[in-house]
Image 1: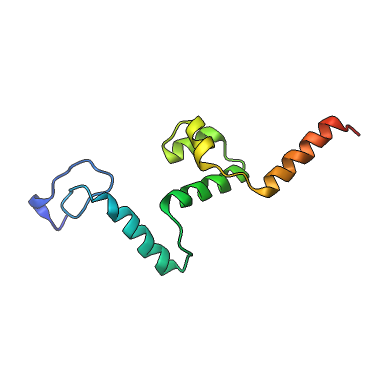
Image 2: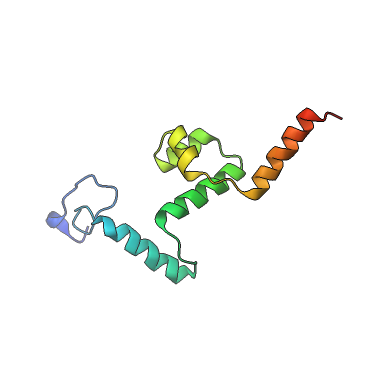
Length: 103
């Protein structure tokens, strides 16, 4: 609002003070600035997406919701951004064992 008529309503989700798109490096630079200020260990933006996706999967968030959140198809999201954690493998083994060794 302070820019007045100098502001161009570009429609970009992330824009500078005048409505122009920001340079792609800005995302990484800003992420690392905020990460450092928060005292979080160094992680890439891609890894933070995978971490968030895995945590949501472990919390039971459906595949299609996580895919929409990341802006991907379900297939790409599950294959690329959802990690398998050791405790998840143990749970899968338990489920498989229950099928093969019914009580």
